[in-house]
Amino acid sequence: MIKALSSDRFRLAVLLALMSGSAVATDILLLAGYSGSKRGTYGYLGAVMPISSPYLYKDGWLLRLWVAQADFTYLSVLGRETKGRAPELEASLGYLKYLGDKNNRLTVYLGGVHRNGRLRPDDPFSNIEHRRNGIRIQGDLSLRPIETFDFSMMASNTARIEDKWLRLRPGYVIQERIVLGPELVFLRGEAYSRKRVGISLESVPLGRNAVVAFSVGREKDRVQGSASYAGMSLISWF
Image 1 (cartoon, rainbow, N blue to C red):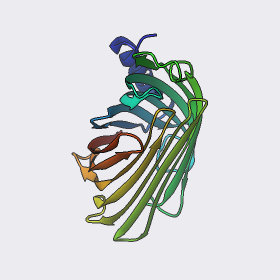
Image 2: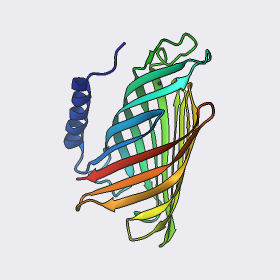
Image 3: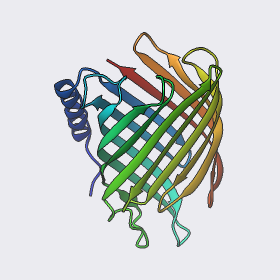
Image 4: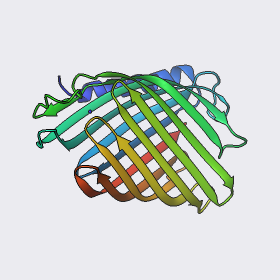
């Protein structure tokens, strides 16, 4: 996906996100997660806050700030295993629309991404180190047509950097929040094309203002074969 962002720059970015949230909004949503397989890992920390009203439970405009890092391996066109590291920063403007109640909603984001990729060893046939700035569009759809069935879809496309991502999660509602079901994920970038099939457990309460989600399954790379993957994410609101 020059030097990786230092931990100090990561902390600064997160601090700015939190400061921006407290300045412009009453509500703030914090998100963190980590997932990986033997071919690579992805970790993120983000914040979402309303900018057209003080509340996240109303239709309106949103600001999303995101810090992430991907570590990955792939086979170059020369057949050589190449390792990469790609920290990134994102700032996006979004719009949230509720489709009847809190369980049915659509959010669309559009923003800019700066990614600082580094490969080891160098790959003269790759543009990963040169394509640093991109425009990302992302959509999040959540539906609950009946009390016991939940469906979510998330998709993003980053122009210029050439990353695409799609995740589908249909599930059975165990309780009002907790959802258990399969997941299907497609990931595609300049150096890889992968599909994940697994099981997810979403929205497990962690105190009054936080939920955690887990996922496990198998990942298939078009060139490198299959491997197991696992992930965990945390959402907290204030």
